[in-house]
Length: 420
Ligand code: LLP
Image 1 (cartoon, rainbow, N blue to C red):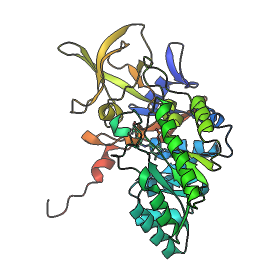
Image 2: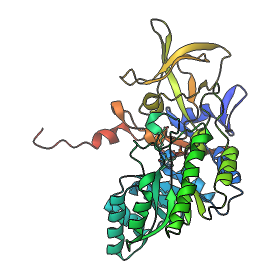
Image 3: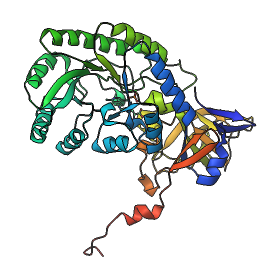
Image 4: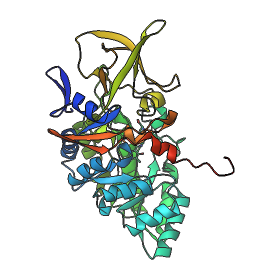
């Protein structure tokens, strides 16, 4: 459920007409709804209500905007970070270090040092050499790092190949079969407090079965580790729960169904459970608002050319992702069209053969479910400015990231004297 609704023939976000934001900020612009964020956090937390003190660490990569993070911080969420940059962002937004978990296959020494200085809750290690490096850094600093190993359970998450992470051929985690020896070795390292297991098999999962299969394997591992003398106190079950993008497809499992499954599978584990939801918290809380530049008749179909492009919302071009595209002020007619951006690549296509609201030049359209992996993946390809972001709460709204002047992009380049 979200708070983008039509009132008086116009899409509103909470109490604010989308056209008001477009007029004031220009397009394209990302628009986020606070009420939707609050609702999703509440629903996710309630779904885990049967668990004792779970740590819900928002996957910052899904939406690292400071105002979004501060909103989630106020609601008591922690952060799952994958870089020193994300760590600093999360802390700056008010997320306490003791709710931060650091994931990722390529943590550098400098990032480890930073995270140890800030005394984060836990590192999720993804390889044995990483454990050795973190140990060395911690010992040199006179500290002990709390760690879990991320396990690759070799489970097919059944999602897009580019966002599957739990198959043995993926770069993530250590193979399940090597876990016992890896824990034995790590337990001997004085700079590590080996206390947890972690797993994350992929994103936009629309079936609970692979998640359950992975969690069952983790349960067995926790038992085997216990038998071998390792006291496992945390189990991080990652993120991955899908959200509805295409109303024609079955709705993905609800947080309640997910929570019920987790509660059932983890009974008796005797650990603190941790979660790293990203998309399910922010996905439906955001839309990308764009204006139609013109409509051009192609050989077979109209091309609706909008002022947003693949640099603003990369998902369709990168993962063939489907985003609902709605007229902000529908005229009651519908059409079948291709929706494209101005970037000079055929991949700059948001929708092909799409049955949608009829729109004409100057009309506003909204790309729905763009709150996760939207602005955060934007770039400046074709020398387009980064997309601004707006946060709405009730009848108030604020620019939470302005559109940078294009001059800033150009001024950033340096022409050495010897070129001039
Ligand atoms: N934890 C770890 C270790 C992750 O790698 C991810 C996502 C998450 C949690 C959060 O997963 P979520 O709950 O959001 O599914 N850019 C892609 C998605 C990449 C996901 C990367 N890892 C997209 O736009 O679909």
